[in-house]
Length: 516
Image 1 (cartoon, rainbow, N blue to C red):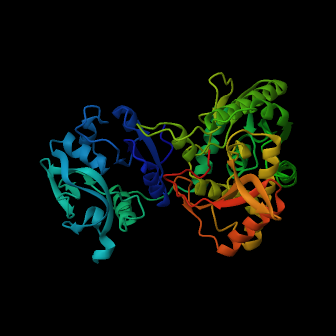
Image 2: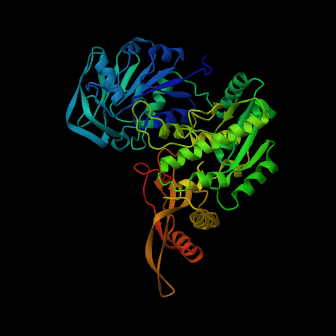
Image 3: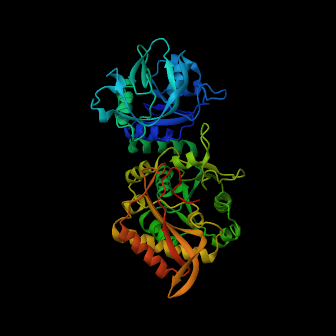
């Protein structure tokens, strides 16, 4: 059943920016979903989409194993926008010609607009405003019957094209990325000018539909919620509690990988400011024993994920007949953990790729299709206090993935002390709320230093601070030098066993935010 009055279906051909298309659409308050290109046409039509967007992808349309789509989709009375590979696939499927380009286009390019309506309606005509971002080695050489060029670039005679009678159109560039200066306007024109969307998807409407869906699924059964104190799990618990009240039981598991004083402060927060039932499980000894000698980050994540599920199932047995486990899984977790339509698996998240096949509880993941900024808005909609909604993200596996190499009690002690200093200095300087995440990482190396005229050979701490909107992309934060200096000096002077601090200046991609 289609519970949304309007819905855009994004067909994913493996592009790393497909999720950005979804973000841009939702910023216009239009609901959208991403489906892999393997989704059948009948399934897509069952959603009754208001419009369809075909994403880019890493392949060439003429490759023997290239992702394809049922060509009947183009004969439906549904507006379709093809982006890069999606545009090329549309053109080829309808009888046009796509070939390898003599001159590839990667990076900034400028459009010469030929048709100033449709996608390009109401745009500024100054040359600087027509900057777009290209990323393709093929180009469209011949359009099918009924199509005409609506824009060209230096190396693409059909940088944008449209069908003169049907609501079919394509662009060779990527309107979803920030480097395409007219991208937001193009997507807005597609959504409102061509698909006739109203933009009525809000967090309020999300609450209403999700609460109804949870009630219909759960009935009178009990639900366990994995509660970490982070934004995602807190919002998940608040949303499910709104739906089923005391049928929800929350479990907080101390896995021994939390920050200094965090367990106590989190339990106090839940006790003082929420009406949630919270069971506190101290499993520090269990997790540290399981992780002894483990170095591989994927094995760490999977062992931690297995441990959580084992404990949840044990607690469920104590409570009687519990069928469901709720988790704060977000869309970025899914993207990084699951190969969607040919995309590469980046890492297993403890609440996605780390779940064992023998798990006996059915999952409820009400935030699975949301981005982090949407979750924060949802938290405010549900009445959660700012201190819960605007906390910096903290990974489910905790400090276990911020210790490179083996996890030991001594190494945890070093990282915890360094982490306290980072958070104290970020908060006292006012920078804590300005960045997406700020934390310390303990490296698996030692370096030579001089302390008190004596040679030392001790550990290295990396400082990682990033700016982001949704964790799908990030850039390193340009902190003031004096702040970086204070953090470094305090760590070296106050944390026994550390003689060097380095700054991580990597963006995502190619790096990830967390080191493991």
